Image (cartoon, rainbow, N blue to C red; front, side, top):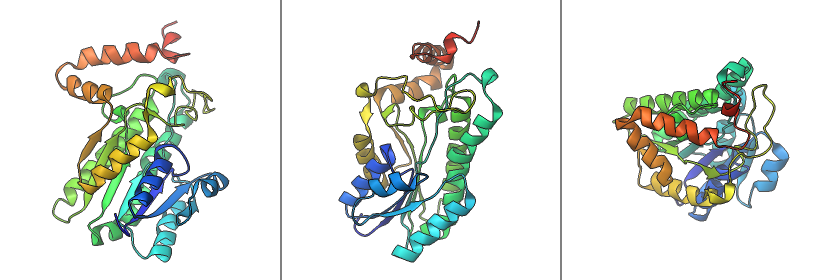
Length: 266
């Protein structure tokens, strides 16, 4: 990692910030980006470059890449981590919520990757997408989240195949349920934030642990990284018993605190 230049979107908290600290610890030059400029500056450690921006804006993504090149002169690793979640059944969900999730989770990845691509190809670098188990299977009450992560995975898999012989490394990461603030900021049916996590954050893999796994997977140039035993099991079993896994997932999501699925069939 020595002197490699790493860009991390959604870098002011959670997995993004944990990755920034881990990559810097391993000798990389780190650039973090996020929408909240004050929060971003507060999160940035000495030596880190903080560039405020919203990944749903193509102009902001272009600016992020240009500023990084101006400051460090190269880009080796792009970690598309900025993301937003939702919790509401589709029939009750405003379409704007789905658009917002696609703009951030999918288009944010497309914009940043597009502008970083010449550098990543030149340096035989890595493009990383922080996906989710929701990118492998449709999670109930998460239509926009699952759709955006499926789209992100399809996009990244295609790029990987297109550049099979160019030395470009593409890694798709599914952290499973990780302790981060993505659930607190998840959108409800009308686009307002749900405000508190429906899950017990204490029982989850920490963002720091996830970051160590991601850094290691970048170094060994892995294709896929599925974290947590539960996540690995769900992905594997679903290949053989899809209906069984659908039922298990529905029941698990239904048990969440204030689950929208409990009011679904009334």
